[in-house]
Each structure stands twice: as C-alpha cells, then as structure tokens.
Amino acid sequence: MTPILIEEGNIKSFEKLVTAEMEKAMTHFEKELVGIRTGKAQIGMIEDIKVECYGGSVMRLRDVASLAAPDINMLTIQPWDKGIISDIERSINISHLGLTPIVDGDIIRLEIPRMTTSRRDELSKLVGQKIEASKIDIRNIRKDVQNFVKDAQKGKKISEDFEKRLQKTLQDLTDNFVNKIDTQGEKKKAELKAL
Image (cartoon, rainbow, N blue to C red; front, side, top):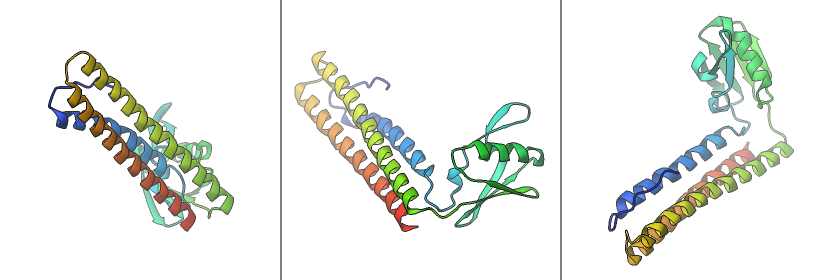
C-alpha cells in the first residue's frame, strides 16, 4: 500500500485516497466473482484464458478472437486469424473451466452444461471463501491506514481530535465496502441457486 499523506483538517483527500485503495480490492473481488461459473454463459468466463500462439507468444483470448454468448448455455469464439484455432482449442482444454471446445469451421463453440446441485453447493462455498478473503483485504487496508494515522498523530502532524475523526471516517468506509462485498456475494449465491 502506498503511504498516505495526512494533513490536519483535510478529510476529503484522506477519504479519496482510502476509497481508491479499497476500490482496488473491490475490483479484484468483482473479477473473481465473474470467473465463477453460474451455469449461464458469460464471456467473462473465458476472456482472460491465456493462449500460446504465434511461436510462443502468450495472449489473452479476448485479444485474439471475437467472443459472444448467443445463448444462455453457449459461448462462441471466432478467431481473427484462422490459423490459431488449434492453439485456442488447446488453451481451453487445459483451462480450469472443464469445457470441451467444439470446432465448427472457423468458429469454436463451448456448450455450458447444466450444473448439478452438488456443484452449485461447491460454488456457493467458493463464493463464501471469496467474500471472506475480500473482507480480509479491506480490513488489512484499514489496519495499514490506521497505522499511518496513528504515526501522524504521534509525530504531532495531526491533532488527537482530527485523528478520531479520521478513524471514524475510516471505519465508515470499511463498513461501506464490507457491505458492498456482502451484497455482491449474496447476489452471486442467489444466481447459483436460481439456475
């Protein structure tokens, strides 16, 4: 975490810096949730798959092909260069998705199978783990910032009253981000149960 400059009476810049740090953790959490399959086709599931092509270059799938979700249980991949279809197929086979690519001319189709109840339960537990990990990330940011605030107060850069205001603002921001994480996580769990 980058050091935070704390100035007496400047609570807005403090709030802005802390929010920016917590937004990074929130963005990471959102990306992880997108990667969790809900039984519904989403291009976010495959767009970051690494494809080794052109003699060893590693590129993301979204950088070498057009991706689409034409149906609730189907994804299509249309490579811009037809010569890398086998490279894309190989990358999908070794990915963690467990999907089998079907090559249909110059398009690769991925059929998303319906999920079993046990798989839904596993994924729901995984979402719970991601929620907890993200809350820990937010709390670690709070702890680091609290240390910066305490050091600033000990170094007589800010008053004791201002330190208490910053601590309250920090706790409010932490609570806000933890609530956002809970809300998004519960939404994802509901998606898993609904399909």
